[in-house]
Every structure is written in structure tokens, then in C-alpha cells.
Image (tube, rainbow, N blue to C red):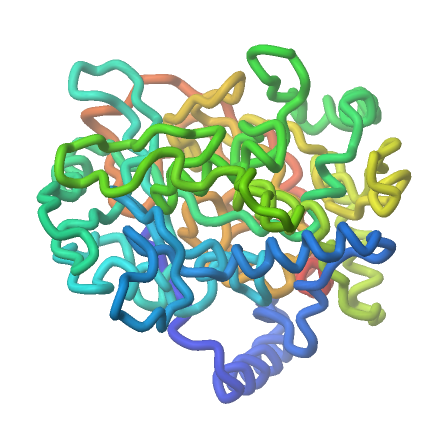
Length: 473
């Protein structure tokens, strides 16, 4: 079983050592992940062309994004040292959006220091740290694949509870038994997806996604690539956010995360996920429109501000070209990576002029693809099956620390090779063993297998050029 490996620190000295090791490896004719690129983050700012009102809403959303949640908010006679808001729990994975989406700037993905370690113990909480959460490891949420009766579960089971916290006196609920779930091979992990440029992705028309899906059919078929869209079960429109492209809009994406990850009820998810008496301290929904306010901005709910922040968050800027990067880009296309990781799509007409008719250099087709048994997680969401995942957008990849849906890899080369999977490969996620709880599916090979074979057959210098290109994004 492949074990996860984690970056232990990303300071200047470690980057220097990485550079020395890369130079040594290069002289031996091998290829190596250059590691997260240094320099300015090139991310974490608003898109250009916002109106004054849009810019104000973006700034207000950023403030909410980095705010810490407590159970009941600031208490009389107690200093609000964390700039807290109310609504945490009763079950939660973290207490701030910005804590988990912090690399390389607010709106990104998980940082090198996992904020969940501190969040689970804050304010006197009696939580035990789950075995799959590490101080220098990836931020994770966990889903249970099956219920005890063998039917599908697939929902998030939060890591922590508010039991023991000073602002939750009287609550007495327990964390899930993750050890027992592990013994049944019943855990499936997810790490945070970066939120840069999501307004541009939201503004891509369904017809553009379908036209791209139907393009280059012969080249795709010759490599075993198909892929399909995921759709909303009610209106039939194409969904595009999340690891399985399960969410349609940024408002839904924000509202679900607010409720699932932090336990904050809101106008889209108005009910507590655990209604145990003694553990519900606020009226619901805790986040709501404030119609008694005279300031229009103050009337807007947190989830609308959060979705507006993500909507107007600019896409990451790539690093300047070098000869190796330019060569790697050409090879990325020639090998067939771009058949799924589409370099660019275009937005339609948006109600925001800043989002209208823009090139979206996302490196994704926004479709879900069969990835084989090696990456299968036994979770079904919409029409995305237990071995299917959305093509992850690659913009911003140059500064990410963890890869794949469960964060099992911190090395880009290992993540690339994990895309290949034959029908006989086993589940390689941390804590997984083939056995009880497996749905028995005989998964076909990953759609990426033929492309990865072509990548593996390249000379080391060409593979290195592709790695350099990816780390430039």
C-alpha cells in the first residue's frame, strides 16, 4: 500500500536544498519535480474591471473569508481576539475558510502548516486528532463510502465536535469512529480545491463545455479518452465545481462549504447537521440577510459575500516563459495531456462586464473522467461515478503543495504517474485496504493511461520540461 508523504517545511533553506538536489539529479539525466516555484504568488487579487460596488463586495467577502468562527460569537466581557463570528458546529472540519484556502494567498489551497490541528483543540475542545490529519500534511475532509447496512453513504463526516469548548457548555457529542471506518476500508479523503478564477469558470456557457467535449474526437478516442459532463438533477444544466464537478454555482458551493466544513447554517442550508439537544445555541439560519440594516452592503448575507469574493477573485498568473517551459508546453500538448486539460475556454455574456467574453486559461475541460481503480474513491455524486473525477484545473499548480483528490502526493511527478491505472490496480489512498466495504466494481483502466505511457516513454529532458512547464502555471 502506498503511504502518503508530506512536505515538512517550505522555508528558504529547504528550497535551496531542493535546488541543489535538482541540479545533481539533472546531471544524472533524471527528471524531478522542481517544487513550488518561488517569487510573487501571482494570485490573491481581484480581477480587473470591477465596478466600485463589485470591488466593495469583493473586499467585504475577503473579510468574511478570513474570519474565524466561534459557537456563539463574541461574548460579553470577553475580548474578541480572533475577530470571530457566530455559528461554528456542532460538527466541523475547521473554523475559517481562509485557514484552509491559504496557499499561496487567500482563496488558494491548503498551506504547509495544517490549520485543522489548532482548530480542533481551540477554546478547550476535547477533540482527538484523527490519525490522517498531520501538522505538515494536507487539510482533509472525510467521507464514509457506505452505511452500516451496505447502502451508499458518500456524505462528509466532520472531524471535530464542539464538546468541551468554553463557548459550548453543556454539549456532549462524540467524534465519528474513524478507526473503525478505516478497518472497514470505509474512508475517502478530499483536500481543498483552490478558488482562484472561479467566477470565470462559472461564466463559461454549457454550450462551450459541450463543444469542447465533442472536439478532437479521433485524437481522444485513439488514447482511450471519453469523459462526460455532470449535470444538475433539477434543471439539467452542467455542474462544474468540486472534485466531481458536483456543484452548479458559487452560491451553492459557498453555502454548502459554510454548513459542511464549519457547521454554519445559512439561507441555502438552514438546518443544523446535528440537532442534539444542548448542542444548538443559535437560531437558524445563523447566517442570513439583514433586512434591518440601512447599509446595502451590511444587508448581504455571508454566503453571498463569500461567493462574490470567489466570483471576483482573479485567476493565477503564470511565471514568465523560459526555453524549458515553452518546450514543456508544446510537449504537454503533443503527448495528449491537453485533450483533457484544455488550455483555454471562453466565457459568455455575463451580468458583470468584468467576466464577459474573457479567455479562461484553466487547463480543464470541466468534465468528469474515469480514472481507474488506483484513484477510485467509491463516492457517487450526480452522474460522476465511483471512479470518476473532474479534470482538475491546472492554473496555480506551480505553487500547490499537495496533489490528487486525497492529498496522497506532494511530488508532482508521482501525481502524474498516479493518473495511469489498469483494471487490476488497487486503492492506494492512505488507510485503505481492498476488502470489506469495496463495492466489487471491476473498474476499467484510467482514461489517462495511454497518455501517461507516452509521458513515461519520453526522454528525461522532455519529462523535465513538462514538469517545469506545470510548475510555471
